[in-house]
Image 1 (spheres, rainbow, N blue to C red):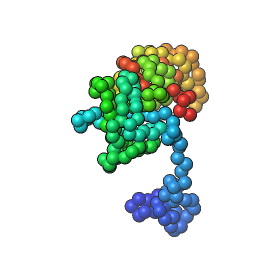
Image 2: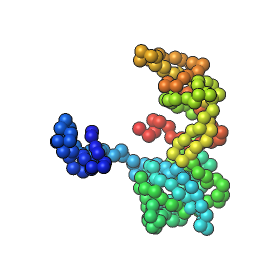
Image 3: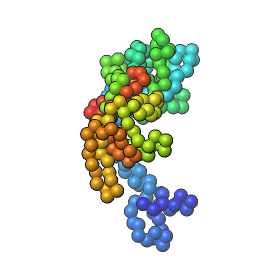
Length: 222
C-alpha cells in the first residue's frame, strides 16, 4: 500500500491516479478502521502487570489492564509473591478517579497491602480466586534471530535477558528439546536435543529463572 506522509497521499484521501496509477485500494485510515480487534475478555481473569509503584501515602501501582476488569473494593493477589491486597482507589490514564477499568486501559491503583516489598515491577495483580500461575522452569518456543558475535551459538547454560510485559531479568537455557534449522537451500532440518543452535533457528527449550515468575500457559490464552 503506497502512502506519502509529506504530501498526505493515501492516508485519509485516495492517492491521485497521476501519482500512483497502479493502486486502487483503500486508504491507510480505511484499513485501520476495518481492523478486527482481539477480544480482551473483560469478564476473564484479571491481569495487570505492574510498571511501577509509589507511596502516596498508601501504595500506588501503575499498570495496564491486559485482561479482565478491576473495580474499587476488589480483593486482589499480587503474583508471584501471593500477597493479598485490596483496591482502595482507581485512577485512569489522566489521573481522574474511576469506579472500574477495562482491558486496554492504563490505571493507577491505590492498594492496601501488608508488605510493600511483596509488590515489585514485573509482578502481576490478579483476582484472588484466579491467580496467575507461578514457575521457575518453563518450556518455550523461541525464534533465534541474530546472536551476538562473541556468543555465536546457543547451548545449554546460555544466559540472556527475558522480557515479559513489565518483567525483565536474566534467565538460563536449561535444555534444548528440539530445533529446526534452515540451510542455504531453504531446506528445514528437525533435530532432537541438539547440542547447540545458531542464528535464524527455531527451537523448543526449557528456561530457568532466578526466582519465581508469573507466566500464563499458552493453551489458557488462546
